[in-house]
Amino acid sequence: MSTLHVALLGFGTVGKGIYETIGKQQDHLRAVIGKEVKVSTIVVKDLGHHADYQGSAKLTTDMQEIIQDQKIDVVMEAIVGKQPAFDYLQQCIIQGKHVITANKEMFAAYGCALQKLAEKHHTKIAYEATTAGGIPIIATIQQLLQANHINNIQAILNGTSNFILTAMRTDHLSFDKALEKAQELGYAEADPTNDIDGHDAYFKAMILSELVFGRKPAPENIQVTGIRDISSDFLQSACPKRIKHLVTLARTDGDIICRIEPQALSETHPLFAVEGVDNAVHLQTDILGNLTLTGPGAGALPTASAMIEDLCTIVKEEQAVLPIEKALAPHY
Ligand SMILES: NC(=O)C1=CN([C@@H]2O[C@H](COP(=O)(O)OP(=O)(O)OC[C@H]3O[C@@H](n4cnc5c(N)ncnc54)[C@H](OP(=O)(O)O)[C@@H]3O)[C@@H](O)[C@H]2O)C=CC1
Ligand SMILES: N[C@@H](CC=O)C(=O)O
Image (tube, rainbow, N blue to C red):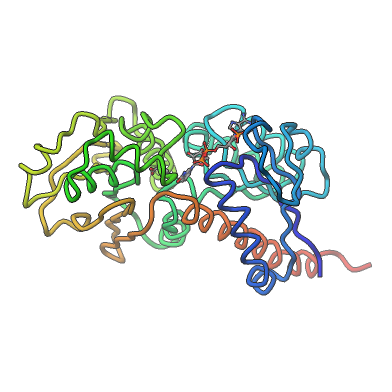
């Protein structure tokens, strides 16, 4: 049986989740894609953070060990920020490697450029984990858009914010205590201001906008407010409504509008019951009608799930294309 060689970029909450899940799911992966999946190299920033590492993959800080290794088929990226992630992934694609990313900040800025580069080099780029954690929202939208138009999206896209708002309302935790808990559970970003000030939800909204509408909203049509100033008293006073950190993305009169802000939702709203770390995306489509997907929006395993699903899709798409290419090849 042949081997699929995988490299990991990042070995924090998400990187470790991928590594452990690939290890545990070997038999299942072998059955699904017909290959042994081997993580051969892991790139981190500081080896000192990994003194207790005992895995079999090589741990290094030198990205060239991935880029120059011709055996590596797929690079799964889970590091932080736009750079050096964008440069690293460009170099991987140029070397013919497939790329899977969870890095929404980088992908919101450079997703289109990476997709074009991947097309040019006949490689694949997958980004399910960038948006709504483990919910297969990117694959669902890609499937839906073949026949439908989506005109309006309402969503909860930040697990940390939803976790904090829920814990403050139901467990009467202070804002700081709830944030601390979200950090311990691996939900929050390295810099949690991205979560609580709405930047993380903004990155995800931009990724959805490019996918659904083919472009981002004009800057004057984007409004972002986080949850930093919300108090327990305010949450209680809104009852029986619930305050949710809501993303609204809509096409109106040729413009795309994006609003990200706390809103009081009544019991009949499709996102009213989305609690804790869960995310949800409510789509209004022209043919299907309304569709709501809900599920874990952050954390090691939901994110690993999204990235390993991407891995399987990439391998299966390759396997489907190869026989066609062979059949189309000239016979001499
Ligand atoms: N946590 C979550 O629930 C989710 C996270 N994401 C995204 O996944 C990515 C990773 O998140 P998470 O695992 O939580 O973050 P962590 O902070 O837990 O881990 C980040 C990892 O990236 C490594 N790293 C950072 N900068 C560099 C660099 N310049 N070169 C090489 N390695 C680097 C760190 O190395 P070292 O260990 O040496 O410090 C660490 O291993 C982020 O982009 C995040 O937005 C997406 C969906 C969900
Ligand atoms: N920090 C993010 C992690 C997943 O994208 C969140 O809380 O949603």
